[in-house]
Image 1 (tube, rainbow, N blue to C red):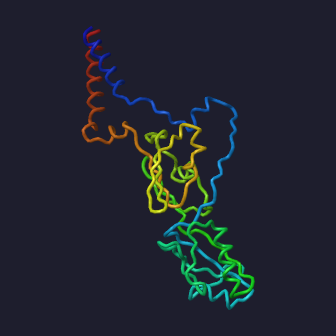
Image 2: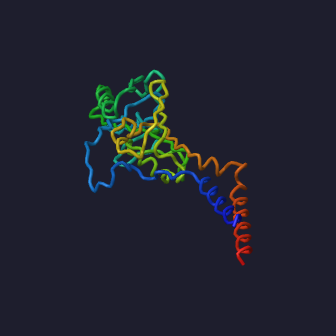
Length: 254
């Protein structure tokens, strides 16, 4: 009979060694509501920052002018437009552009930058049309996700959930309630933690990402125990002891 109690005791040890159940549900505080609505947070347009790389195309009624603002050698894109590989915004916030020289674009949205350059270029060419796009709008997702990587965003607008989707979502070990976002702006690095178990994250200023944001999904303690070299044999040892206890109990009951 003592061996029976020993067997039960071993089972309790195994159960107590298991990690506590994690909340794997996003927005779990909706409490089963069938419908929920809230005002969509205005993400705002991304602004041009230091070290951004911009793709700038210029089109006008003069083919000669188009070639002037294109790289050499250059090939026309769709519609006869020409495009350089990219213009990097320097530490002072300027790009160096043909004819115009130094043009300060830092702090402007894409629309504002296009309007500024068109206004300046129309002093030299007729009906200049400028198109600007980010060539380095990237976000990085690392940690407890299925496909950690750096992703280039072509739409220039992405939120936390979309970025996690690109990374294949979190693994069961990822702390959904404690996701770390790292953002660099104006020479400062900001770090913010967000809780994806709560619907309040939708109203967070960090829900929509900016270029070069880094998302780190921290693993829970269960992952640390699993990968620890000192605990790799523990499940086998417990299973062996349990098997011996079961056999001994069966033998004594005969």
